Length: 307
View 1 (cartoon, helix red, strand yellow):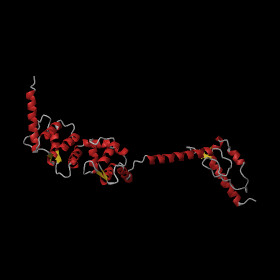
View 2 (cartoon, one colour):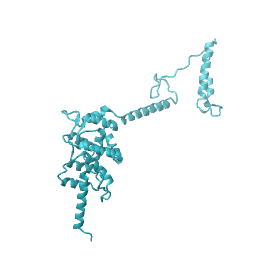
View 3 (spheres, helix red, strand yellow):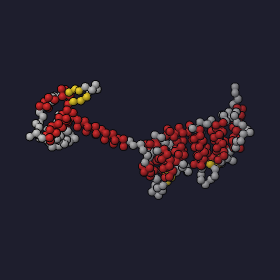
View 4 (cartoon, rainbow, N blue to C red):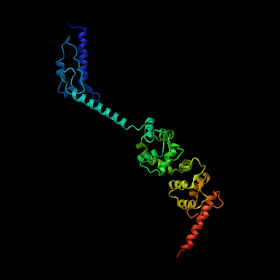
């Protein structure tokens, strides 16, 4: 007996078959996909179940390999499609894992663990001279390299040869470095900061308190000469000034005003001292240096007259 339920079942099945074998082309004309398929549309029509027949067949649940979970027959093409999606998911998962491995985000916890590699049990919150030596070795930088002074400046370190945990976290958080590899990649950037005259001046002035013995108000002359070698290695008058300071016993220390004026002197006075202004507001130390250097050059000229 034909019932409304049977008719409705047939209509639903017919619509499913129609959607499977018909599609719209760009010119809105209907074409039969079935004609290009080994399973002809006409064959499906002829094999439709009779009205009032059994329920619509269910697709078997498939495993990732494309085989039905219930052991039924595999529909042609299903295995390739399932395998394609499976491999696509695998590639996406692999990409996500790879991106996590190369994560460039900064970790305070990781940075702190790195700091502990250079501290001792007796002083866990201070990186001392031995730790500093190991740190420079891991970084591949000589301790006297000017870039170490820039790193100390970024950390706001208060004493040469020491980094506190607080200074370490402050500086490396700003640089976003939590490993030696990341800091090595920042070395060129840190060196280039010295090309900025304002930043260079700030680092130059910072170096005075950084290198000064905290028990003294001034910087020892020997330390000042060494710092000038690091900060102004190309200044033509650096070597003569260092010699002058080492010869004159009156200048055992360099005060802050003298230190700051040495930088201005290096920027404004040429090698031949032609731009030096005797009436300028230079410290007495620099005035005496100019007099000494002119005297030395005059003596050399008398000893070796031009032919």
